Length: 145
Image 1 (tube, rainbow, N blue to C red):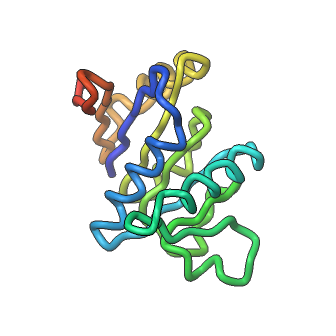
Image 2: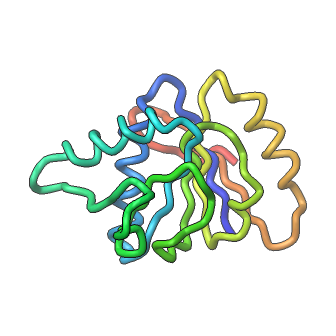
């Protein structure tokens, strides 16, 4: 299983999430986006709708009868009724449930940097876990570790 750490460093989380979600969908896979803050999920919902007619990202907020049909599901929980094998942690709060997915994306900013460092250390040497750390450099994501 892969865990990709993305340091936001001033970037808008919603735009990074939209970019990663687009890549997951291009692989014909599903994504679960997790955050404890329902207001943040509502903002993300609007951003994903406003991507424009050529880059619409099909998604839904959890809690509807259509959860299982959503390619991208925004939720406060870590269960995937949409059968996603990819989890994106959008709020900088590490969740052990991420390790039950094939791939997890962990976004963190300056406020959650200490938590990200702790998660990085706790995952070191865990069998079957491949960690990668990404940071922006010259407008592109570059793998740093």
